Image 1 (cartoon, rainbow, N blue to C red):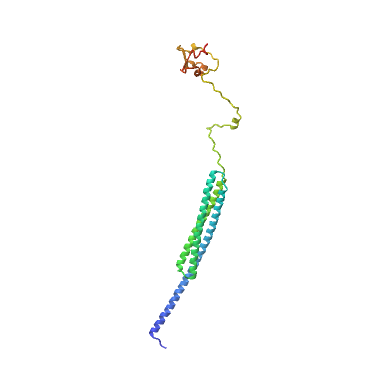
Image 2: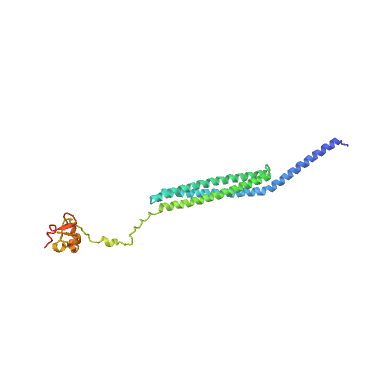
Length: 258
């Protein structure tokens, strides 16, 4: 049997095409095989972090509910009530932050699993799927950490709410006494003392003075300075000085002279 040159060429080209396709498939299978391990590891890591983030979100929600219950129980003081209101609000916000972070982690885990499935089914570029799975795993890890921080903040706020509602009223500030200590118990049993006022124009007592002796300058009046030699008259000077001219006449001292 003889073949023409044209037939031989056609057969050669067909054989080369089959061999080339086989080589491409072999290379693709090899790349997929190499990508399976890292994509699987990334997907597993992302799922684990997503589960941890979800648990932290639940813990944060429980802390927020605890803070709300403490606030509703009523505080001892008005300041405590205001502080409890603020701390309960803080706990609720932290719970919302934890929930958002958990959702982000779950979405990242789904993306990582999607990349793994593409590699397992041979429907994706292995190198690109590996990078996508790794990035998704990193995103899930960051979201899990954020959820943990938010849960911690919610727990601290719940504790602060409890402390606010149970805080007693502040003791009254001590009054400064400038170094003088008052004995309250002793003062309480002291007898009552009554005070009576005396009209300013009265003269108390039966006193006698020598007008001529007191009138040192013999001007017919006794000045305050001249009256200073008599302690009693000095203390009563204002009462005796009826016209309030600062000196005493014989008439004003009529009841005093002898």
